[in-house]
Length: 204
Image 1 (tube, helix red, strand yellow):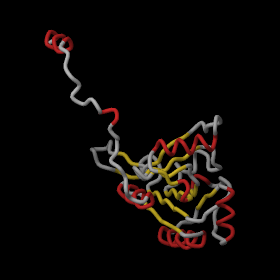
Image 2 (tube, rainbow, N blue to C red):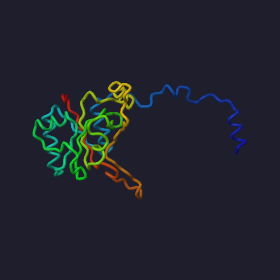
Image 3 (cartoon, rainbow, N blue to C red):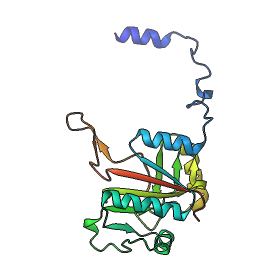
Image 4 (cartoon, rainbow, N blue to C red):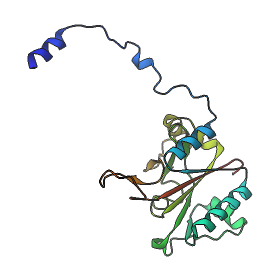
């Protein structure tokens, strides 16, 4: 066998794929980024909600709170706290009784349309905990944070933080999941079992 391998290595052959490195990894995308992201997020069991403004967002989150009977809703982002307070939406501003948290509301760094992923970092006020511990994770994003590929998301990060990059940058693709147990898919195994992404058009 080793002789055959050695002989094959010594034989010079033309590269059967000479232009492979110049070939795009993904086919060209002609869809609107909002539509592509919504499709891909839905494919990984996430939930996408488009909102025209803050009022639209509040109406949608009130419906979710009623549907899931949420009581322990946590939000540590000052600008989100201001938005929620403006419409008198109840939430916890501190980590009091955090072990009972049902919902975490956070910002994000970017939405990656190609695979329906959310890029987060520890530089936001939510830190590392709020997107991981509660059973339901709600992400609030602006339309300007929606990009096509992972490289575009890293470009946003680089432009925002320059040389002071966050110590933790991660991507979330749908709810937490595992198939380690008898190859049966289980959602919410190591983190949130529900992911909701709100894309707000005029949120600032």
